[in-house]
Image (cartoon, rainbow, N blue to C red; front, side):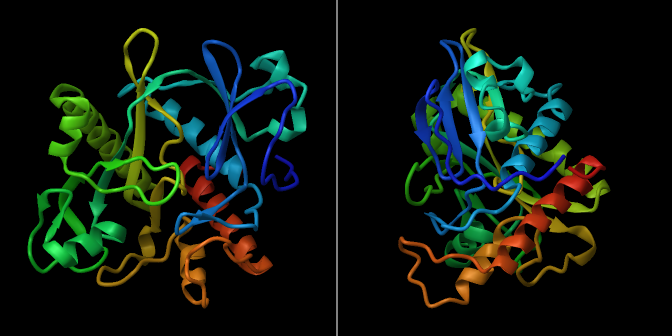
Length: 299
């Protein structure tokens, strides 16, 4: 696929914008469908950076399509098509703006919870563990080191925040919000999807340290997997051949950008600083390499 000009924001006169997230612009396609456009925006520390990451939206879309197909036997999903020719006329006229970065999906009633699965102790989970010995109500063994693999993957839900930080919550708190039955279903699906995906990824040279899923109910009442799935934005991908517990790991995800920003004198409040061209380019290369390794071909 030929690289296209980076896209920071979209606007289509014939499509109604439903919401603009940190990365995705979501439009109403018709009464039953949405058009999700993955831009090249990148966020860090809850701030959208002014510098686009070229081809990022393409990677997120193509990798989600790959995983939706691979994991469809576990749970149905909202994807209808990523092919512009199969989309409504209102979308097809914007050919180049949408090519490779858009998904036509079924509308759902979205559960207001991020379903996070952690196979390794890192990120906010590591900080919680250092402070309390627990992560989202899970009492973990004493003496774990940073990035260490957990005895078994754990389900650690969080609230969803359009702005600011998601909040880690316990499974008990999730049950208060969604009910015990739905909570149990989402937990079991999340753990199964993570387990199967991480086993596959390991054969491709990638450790999926953790990931987050989103779910909704379709018009028939089925629970389905929605949004993106197992991308460098929603997961921590580590190169398996460089894995060494006891420290932060090199990664194929946006941790590289976070690490750069940590070297700056920036208070992590908007406006976010621009990224140097070499940092942006290196981030693009990491996203493309994650796709190549997982799918087995270049994008």
